[in-house]
Length: 173
Image 1 (tube, one colour):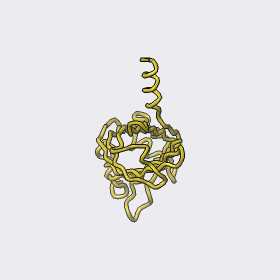
Image 2: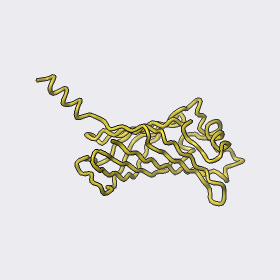
Image 3: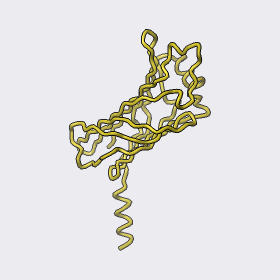
Image 4: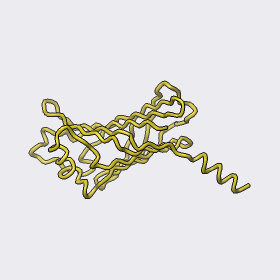
């Protein structure tokens, strides 16, 4: 009997994973060239039984329109050789997978974002839907570069916003 109970607990904790979630970040200032990057190889995990989520993005995976922007992002700002990844771990408040439908439902996610050697509590809005076995998750939130000690040189401060808009889209099956 204990073995049956243990196997049921493990089965109920089964997670849904994708390795092709997309994160887009944007730190543009009006009147200047857009500063935006996209990473489409992000790992995103949802535990449908508990509403826990986790995401891992390799920072070198962000691609920018201009090669020079990408180089500056990796070398001068994110220091990706020293801080190669960003990790988010959180909880979807009031989540119950049985309540998901094909219509998006609004949720709040609270958790910790670890990036550039710093950790910060984050609260973000999310829209989640389910169609068959596919769960789609969309979240938009903002962080301040300064909260993660990401340097913005005075020379270009007027071109690059401290407030970084982040969007994550994950389709889990």
